[in-house]
Structure formats: structure tokens, C-alpha cells
Image (cartoon, rainbow, N blue to C red; front, side, top):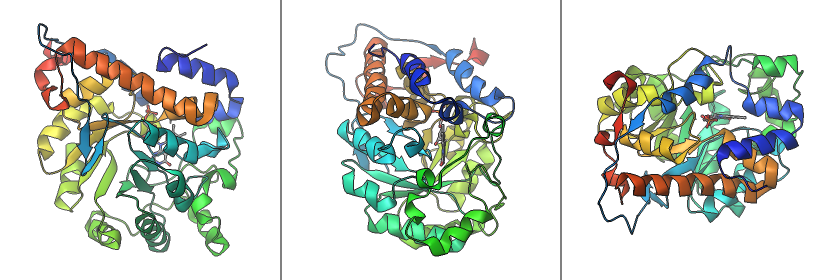
Length: 359
Ligand SMILES: Cc1cc2nc3c(=O)[nH]c(=O)nc-3n(C[C@H](O)[C@H](O)[C@H](O)COP(=O)(O)O)c2cc1C
């Protein structure tokens, strides 16, 4: 069967993935309320299309931190891709590049920073979880040397916590699936014990030593643009701008960390209007349809990232499967533009959507 939608791909992935891998990817934290809300909130936003506009030629391209991408959908950083397919992050990076978009390599990648850069054909960002200054400095400077274009600091995982489904399943994470970038540094292996997010054996780092006032330190390590991922509130978005970040990802980690927050799309409008032009604003969590992308852009995002669907694609067909996931979203988004009378990303404006509170 060829997947017609991402939901088809999800079903196919569930059929082929070992139970524990499926649960690792699908799970969210607590009662998974935020994860569900990530979908229902998108569904509750309605669209106001305009017709009798020449939409014969559509340009979906957009610039993100100075990099031109072919359409405003990027691939989120997500650890453990080798647990789902042996080609893991290398396959995902190649798939993203092949369709003209950008990939963010996670700290906990099975392939190293350099191994992914060697095969990538499109722009890369590097995501960092901060454990201590030594590891952060080592990894971000290697990312810069390997040609990554920006550093993406994930802030919404101050301590580790396993998902309940993983605990029930006795989910075991193989270091080779998560720690490619530290493979050659057995001397640093002990650092794993200080606690690495998304590992099963947690002992929290608590983000000791990395607070807002040290963002300048992080930025100066590479001089690359700095993206703050995991922003849930206007307050934190403003802090990001004040302390010199270049962009934020409005994200709740796909509901995988703190449960009980609003969905990203619900918080996006207030965050986007609070930061204005000071930061580029991206969004993830719950993107499954081209229409979701349109809604996010109408409410202030410059581009979006997809998380779980990359694992579905990988599990079903490796690199080609991730490309399929991106193609499905791109085609749906292109169609949504045409149906709404929009031919350029800049034309996707606030009048295009109505929030439930405005009905
Ligand atoms: C299996 C899995 C692992 C993830 N690992 C990371 C990670 O290492 N770093 C990070 O910043 N986000 C991580 N995320 C979160 C994603 O970057 C993204 O925020 C989320 O998946 C978006 O929601 P979606 O899955 O509904 O698209 C992970 C997500 C999944 C599903």
C-alpha cells in the first residue's frame, strides 16, 4: 500500500515496528493530554479561503535564518533514529536534503555529527541538550567545524523523566543508537551517568550551569545563530530575545516532556505577536497535515518541523520513507495554498484562519 496521508504511514509503521520501538516513538508524558491537544487544537482552527485568484504558479520557498528551503517544513531533532532503522539519522538527513529542506541533528544521534554531515545534501542545524560545559563546548564546536548552520538549544527538558509506556515495557536503549557523537570519547562515557535526556536510566542534570544569563556564552562558542527550542510562554520567548537568541521553536516536544501545557498552536499567536520581528518563530508538535502548516504560518510561524512522522517513514522504508513523509506534507501544503488563493508564503496572513475563541 502507498500511504496517502501521514496517518496511513503511521498505521504502516505500527505494523512493522517492534512493539517497544513503536511505543518509544508514540509515547508522550503523563496522561498524554498535551499530545492529544496538539491535534485537537489544530482541528478546531477553521480556514477562510479566497477564490478567483490566479494560483497557477506557487512558490513555497522560504528563508530560515538565512538558508533558503524549498518549502516551510523542516525535520525536527529526535534522538534514537537508529533504533528504528539502521540508516537512522544519515537516512533522514539525506531525505531532507533530497527534497530541499533542512534537518536538525539531535544530540542523541546514533551517527556522529561528522558522519551525518558527510552524507547530507541540504542544510543542517545541530540540537544540543546541555549536560555540562565540557560536553556542550565539544559538541557545538564540532558541529560548527562540520558545517552545521545553527545551534538549537532544547530548553524544555530540565530534568529527565522516562515515559510511563517505556517504563512498563522495560524499554532498553542501546548506547549505539543514541550516542554516535560520543562513540570515540570513552573518557566522556561517565558523563552519561550525569543524566542524558531521553535515556531510560535517568539522573537529572537539572540544567545546572545553563541559565538565561549564559546564553551569550553558548552563542559565543560558535558564533552561529542560536535557536531556543521548547518555548511555551510569552515570557520565555521574550527572555530568548533579550539574551540574544536568533529564533525560537514554539514546541512542547510533541507532548513528551511536561504534560498539561497548551498545544503549540494555541500559544503561537501570543508568542509571535510578543516577539514581532526580533526573532524568527518556528513551531512543532502535532503537524500532520498540509493545512496544519498553513494554519501555523497564518498565526505567525515562519516554518514548522515534523517529529514523529520521520520515524514512521524511517521504519517503513528508510530514507525513501522519510522522503515520502515530507512529500505528503509538501503536496498537501501546496494544495492548501492553491485552495486558499495564496501563491507565496508571505501571502499567508492572519485573515486566513479563525480561532475557536473567535467564532
Ligand atoms: C522519539 C522522539 C525523540 C525525540 N528526541 C528529541 C531530542 O533528542 N531532542 C529534541 O529537542 N527533541 C526531541 N524530540 C521532540 C521533537 O524534536 C519534536 O519537538 C516533536 O516530535 C514534535 O512533535 P510531533 O512528534 O507531534 O511532530 C523527540 C521526539 C520523538 C518522537
